[in-house]
Length: 434
Image 1 (cartoon, rainbow, N blue to C red):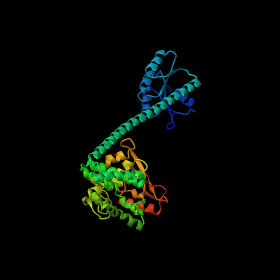
Image 2: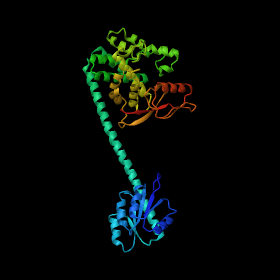
Image 3: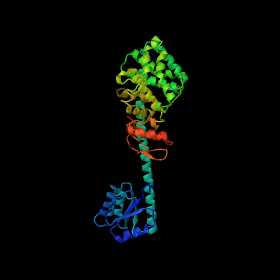
Image 4: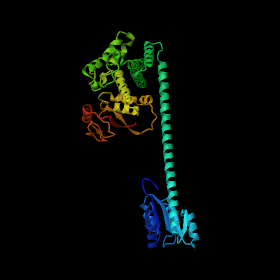
């Protein structure tokens, strides 16, 4: 018997008084009793029954006999136990029922009531054991299949990671090892590695993302080196300032903090303006907070007017911060977040180029094509995201139902309520792996 659904026992006999007697005998048993007055009626009834654990049939019936019925019943209830009720003279039919009909036992008529009840209980225990064994086998089979898929995905990701590392090593070797840019990149990279804090990890990750994309775009080695160093130093203007360790969204900052924060791209450009060899990184550092739609700072540049290196740094910066904001499924969430900001904050044509390297950097070995949800803060929301759970304010007011797709108005609504009356949890959004 299963916890989900009670088991059913089907009795088939052409004599109504015997069926009534069987039903009375089974009144106190913990299963559903169904009856049929012929083999044909029994087959028809089996078509609509679920979880049939036992079929008990008389042998001598007009039309289809018991042995034939039990044999044909396997089509509709293949895992059910089967018992044949037969007279002493029906030895050949009994053999047929066992050999062809799948009967596990026969009981002679007239039967002993207690013996029949005990036999039925034993048969149902055997059915339950078989059902549990099949359930466990299904679990093992599914887990084996999932493990094989996970291993296949892991192999693909590891091969991708290995290829990326090899390509990056070859690209670095192709640069002039004695050039000022290469020496400075190594110096600052080692410096950030030794620092090891949140800002250092951010700088090195952004540099890795930008370098890989720039190289795969076919840019010349000198340009790749400039982009690499600019990405590594894009936040250098924060060093020694009030916002050096300020991990807030611009919308959360006070007026004085926002003013100070908006100065760091200009300060970073100025830091390196007197070094001739670093002249190429200044504009990229200056404009890495410009928005593709023209609403960024400090110059409110728009579209292709923003230097290519700065657009790449902006995307990498956003991906790193988005990945850092969630605990799991970082690559897919960060890529989705970047995708939804294509055309506003980010260059939509360049966002897609970050997919491969992002999955390498934030590799988690998940099964491909999986659906999942992540918890984010209200300022991480963007139009196009799908709500995974109902969103409520701190006072329990329903703001957005599960399954709704956010637009700009709903994003503003949720942010407003979270600012005025925040609940203890964030917002859960759906993510689908590409």
